[in-house]
Image 1 (cartoon, rainbow over the protein chains, first blue to last red):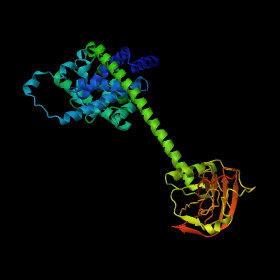
Image 2 (cartoon, one colour):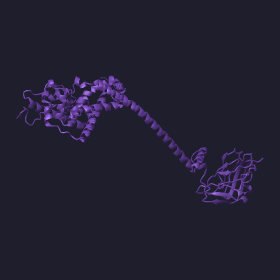
Image 3 (cartoon, chains in turn green, brown):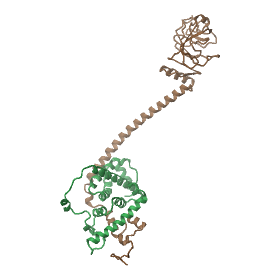
Length: 194
Length: 279
């Protein structure tokens, strides 16, 4: 979307035009959902819906370009996820039998590592399963939000240097874990190639 | 010298320089452009940023409709809230302005720093609510909180002021009915006092006043058609106007009786009963 196009879409969306809202939603919804799934798969759907409602309430007050809009949306999503986790922490947990869990395939099923069948949701699951939350968050924000280190630092409330370190460690850890998994899964299929 | 993976022992096969990390972090590095040990990472990140699949956009129109409705609703609420906020702020601003103005005016009035007419008005208005401020005639007027009542000795009032029959060429023009005027400041005035004072002056119709006020300066208010000022402190000076066109000035020497704590370094209103106009 060009700057003019985005300005037009944003202005229309702020007036409540459904077509404009649909454009923004189509553009950002998949990214937001992947981001949230990468941090907490169980909460992603609910939190994403909350994110859009919160954004809708404050959309009229937003000023900025497309990049800033993305950063704004990811900030809301992250904050909503934090709220959701706080609420969940106050709720009693429900025990689930291991048999039930055993029936479900893992989201990061190594079968998905074959790149020709690797889909976005599996890639998200890989990142989530391989990385600590802080590292996964930085990498997901950079890739899915299309944000630079400074913008990510502003969103997560850390210094730029810290974000760079988290990114560096996350990439390295991801490379190590992927190498391990691929080696464990199929010695004959070395590496994930497109 | 190599470990199981073919790399020299001690060599970090996942070493990653900052520039490469930055490029990889964008998620847009082609697999072939990535370092060998990071090709899988580059592939995963590329998939992460791929365009949405159709199932990810399912239900879009319904969601967009709901979001648009929320946007419209929020906009309406915001405009209502904004107008309420504006009205509230306006009220607060006006109230603040009025309060500031009153405080400023009151302060200036208390300090006697207002222009003459304004000071007199402030004196009268504030006097009505029991606050005494100067009248602007060099000495404060005190109304409503009299602490001194001075009476001229009637026997000494043969030449006392307010004689409407005594016309003086230098006297001011006849005051209109119920007019208030400020008596001129004379010399040899009272000693400074600390407490406010107000006296009473009574003047029979058409006859010289037997009583004078305890102040020499101040406003003489005519209750009817006569005005008078009196000096209760040793000497009485007075001016009198009669609606019939008679003006009088007089001086009286006598003693004033003061009740209470006198402080007569202030102008005083002398309300006189209506005098009978001279024919």
